[in-house]
Length: 346
Image 1 (cartoon, rainbow, N blue to C red):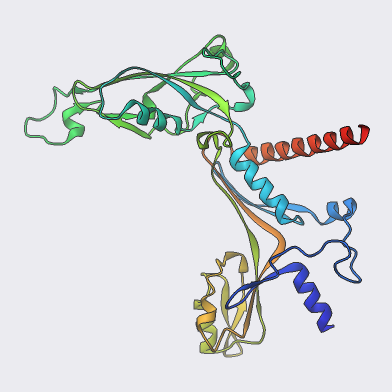
Image 2 (cartoon, one colour; image 1 turned 30 degrees about the horizontal axis):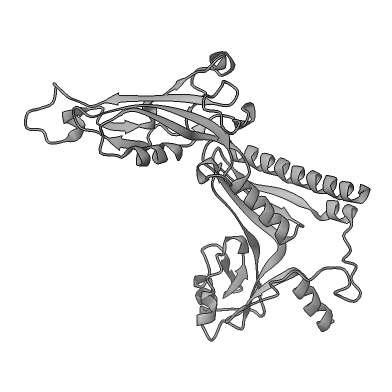
């Protein structure tokens, strides 16, 4: 029984020790363990695989993906970062720039501004095309000139009072419809995600006069096309108390973990530590600094339980980004199967 328990731990848990991490490699492949049928089975996979949404709002999504291997989880993360398309500024036509920001720096800054436009409604621009069309290009204009405020007090030194339009924000970017875009997209739907991103600061007499072309692209080509501010995953923490922890030791144990992980209960007049919510733990391994506690707890992570965190830049809702990433992964699988079929036919 002890040997069976050790094998099950190797198969299902990544164990964090004081000086290292054990069982980091996937070992449940066919024939590796006597008595275990690890051959891949579709019906078993469908039964064990699940996705649980933990939290979702307009900009972030946290969900659990259970029953997959690290390779699939990491592929899903990389697709979110680099292969889900968005619209971003690709070309900047500078007609006048008398600010202190150089043209190249200004163009780079404009490229990193997230644009709220559904990329699924646009096509990729053909390589070499200089002039865009309504099906592959969005056009914005930025035309701002700084002037003195005639109503400002004479003794004022505040630039917000002295000058008009001295701060150029994304709210000054104006969408210029191409072709029939004005009929397809209602007014106000095509715009920067945030109106308060500072682009440049001006002084009286300085001005910006630019035209920007936004095209469809993916983060693999340039980070400005990445639809997520962050996309990460971690394994579900698994904390086990190897023996009862009572009294002052229970209080000390709770302070070794993130708030809410260890709960100290009053049972029959004694303070007793219990594991309340291991999901909240960040695994600082503070416990290993305490000689009297480090042998009372086992720290591990569940090997096939991934906690995904997706934070959108605002271009698309996070749940849409996740569904688009799944479609990209499915497309890759189809292409791989088609390649296998073509090789077999040859």
